[in-house]
Image (tube, rainbow, N blue to C red; front, top):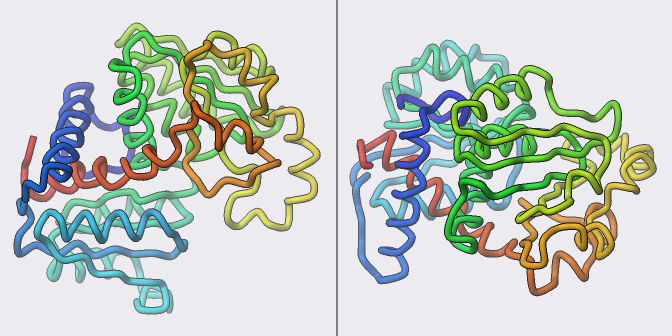
Amino acid sequence: MKHFISIHDITGEEFQQLMDLALKLKKETKAGIAHPVLKGKTLGMIFTKSSTRTRISFEVGMYQLGGHPMFLSANDMQLGRGESIYDTANVMSRFVDGIMIRTYAHQDVLDLAKYGTVPVINGLTDLLHPCQAMADLMTVYEHKGALKGLKLAYVGDGNNVAHSLLYACAKAGMDMSVATPAGYTCNEEIVANAKMDAKATGSNIVITNDPVEAVQGADVVCTDTWVSMGQEAEKAERIKIFKDYQVNAQLFGKAKEDAIFIHCLPAYRGYEVTEEIIDGPRSVIFDEAENRLHAQKAVMAMLMAGEK
């Protein structure tokens, strides 16, 4: 594993190694055991798309691994003034030991990995959000004790979160059903790739427009904001289109009695999910948020120090 750009790109063995390492690092952190495996190393963190959780979790994670995180906004870089990705990747590779980028265009991440010589981590693009999906399934494992054979239902926009969950569930052998309105479905190539991976692990992928069908018998229910960053002009229209895809008591009641609710945050209560669900006893959103730290530490440790 040279980069962490898409869960589809890694093997099932690498997926399991990342999950095991994340759980190990979390356990050691809670026990006060230091693990400075990245001592003396620097992670360059490029943000052309702002964030709360991504910046904090990567910065804290690098400190806990003994390394140094370097925050770089578009305003801090010549990249924001028209310098090519080719030049940026080559120059940064001479200075840092790894690059994390959170941006809009997925091609930017691919080009950094292509032209640079250090590991590249996808902190988020408009197409994929793999670090979030690793944290999500880590949280499911902690609460359910397994991944294989479980069913995760995703309801809402067929966006980067849905895409990476499709890849992660397929690698883990989890069934996944996705319910989106017509016109807001998941990327067809990603669905095809996920179904291909699912065949290898024996899991089942279902794509539907019916939220009840998706949630029926689910062990995990997930949703995301209806209006992602950069879509603010579509807000009024999206609220109308997605109103029947709200995760409320009626819809959540179609899942198993011990189903858990996850959401990557930020959440907008009263829109994609009601307060009684997201703030209820079966919501694990803050465990999930914390696990971004541990999942990303596993990615950094594996890529930049060869930890397994």
